[in-house]
Amino acid sequence: MNVLDNLLGTDAGTQLAIYLNDHRAGAEGAEALARRSARANADNIVGEYLGDQFLAELRDDRALLEALRERFCVLPNPAKQCAARAAELIGRAKLNGALTGPTPLGRVLELEALIAGVVAKRQLWRTALTLPDVEADLFEERLARADDQIERLEELQRWASGEAFGTMT
View (cartoon, rainbow, N blue to C red):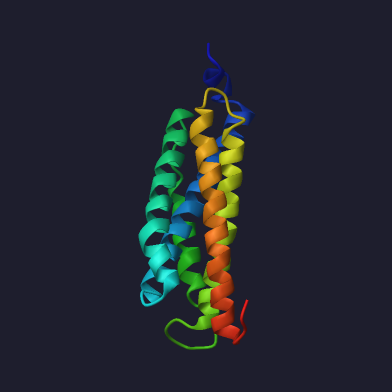
């Protein structure tokens, strides 16, 4: 019996399944937000980064998360995925200073939400390093990429704040 067999069907295995499905739902919501924000910002540096590099990296990270879920025999939780999509849609209705369309404040808030999502994803990769029989180098690479994403998103958030609030940061 291997370590994986010891996890399956245990409280720890149940907790891992919940954890990975929560992250999967978060990944889906983050990807939807990034796609929408990329479209809304197609004419500036936010859209350039989100639409090119960032979305491709999110899809790649989601694929690794799917592989991790498969590795530990975690079945998808469609209810959580639907809830993540609904949360992203509800997020569009937030008060951002305009009844329709994107606003500078909305851009700031979307970038902050994406930063929070990447911070959570970074913790997922750190947690993955504690799991049995995982390829540590791959998760170390993802940790470094998450750090780069956070840094870039924070730069964009500072730019967006300057645009929204008329300040230079």
